[in-house]
Length: 303
View 1: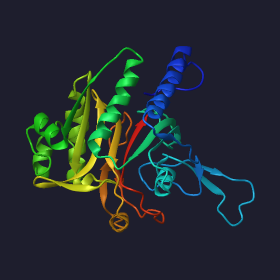
View 2: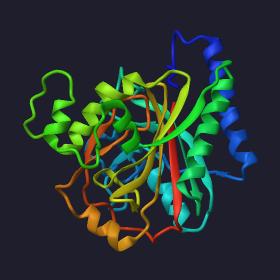
View 3: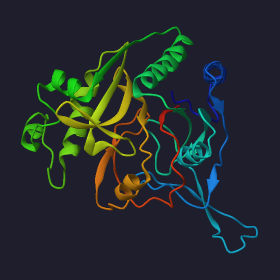
């Protein structure tokens, strides 16, 4: 949900937002999930080249540290440090900042909800994410049924092709209109088909939890074997054609993560967990790794 701030905002919208915040806190309090508050400003920016950070200049004593500080684009990294320290199930509802983003799914400054469940499997996390959205919809007298379907199922039903094995030529043939193919990878074509052919046709009144993405789109998720293919244990949650949230089973193997993060030329799609279409991200070397947290599943919602 996106609600503007400043002049012109109705009192009704502000009250609705306050009610939504209360609902979120009650939802997690009833489930024993701890609310945390992590730093908004840090000495380093995010590691995702397609998400731009805002910077500020610090005017006080720096004791050799850089004066340039960075506003967070999500609470991900400080929350993972808490997980590594053994905090357990936790969530944060707070402001995040992304430069260059306006007029799309959210403003340059917006509220993000992020939470982690330690030791869960992906299936109950999908259920919990859907339950939260359904509770929020009830605030405005709406409801939506949940459907869970794999990435493979959704593409097969919509286009009659197998997204795990289809060639680039087959994916190109399924795309309506002309696109310059120069530089586009197989994952790019899968993304274009999702945003231009499949996603717009999702039925209203339905929550779709689409899971088991191609292994090439793993981002920070674990990769597992499903039948004849490797898949990434992550999901996207859609309300009709609107992408609301995502979640994944965190990759916590330090050696595997280090190898993945040092592959500076590997590009994988990443869903933006807001109402915008998916964007590309290229993996870059991450900051020095902190201790591996216990196996956790995370989910995020932007509003």
